[in-house]
Length: 307
Image (tube, rainbow, N blue to C red; front, side, top):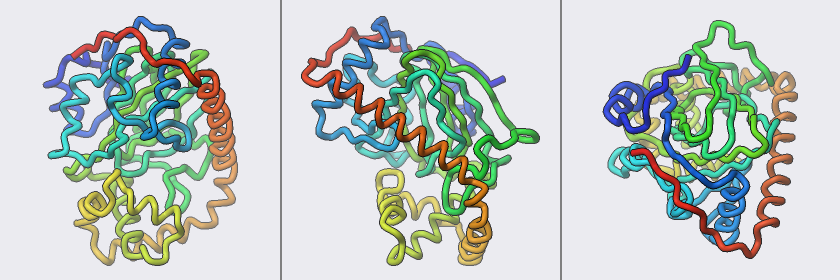
């Protein structure tokens, strides 16, 4: 069972979970009296009117001030999003709108990100797997080879994230997420810590892959080059930090290890098809939500943050 502690218990969170890079659910992180429909309309109205917001694959990247009078930033999140201890992007908040039945396929997040995932409205069912007991991924990607890999022998947690709760998901944890309620709205705050990750197979793979990409920069495809140059929102400083202990031998061996996985693309085809379907469904849903809120003024009752 995944640990749960009060969002107001900063000392326990920092010492036992954040610095140890262990997942935890922070309860009573926020209390909103607006309905899911109201929140959905107001957030989309603000996104429509904000030229700094950008639509990604399955979510929106926005700046923190877009949440003013709607959600705000919990104090514990504000505490760790400090440029002295983390690499931060300008648009460090992700907003998700997912209908019931939406599934986020198995993967771990790129850019070595810690994620604070607030279940602002609705409910989602999570299964997460530790980076020291990883799944096999397709070459140079964060997506698992199999659509529904077995979790037997893995260090894993399965749990529901209820409205008002916030999951701290450390970097490199694999996750599979199912949307439960009719409309599920999640707010994420993302950052890459400047301290090195807890040792794991997945952490080592990510560092070696980025070391390799940095050396192959001149010949990388456009998408891979974009990821490299914008890693963790800052590019080279984050990549240098991540890869400073990767040896040439380890980096070259990583190339061989990833190339050996190329035949797994055929096995992974169902997983990639599922990911593409989820992407297309979500893009249609995001377009519908935005078109329904054009011209609205964005203001809802300020929820009570638990700090």
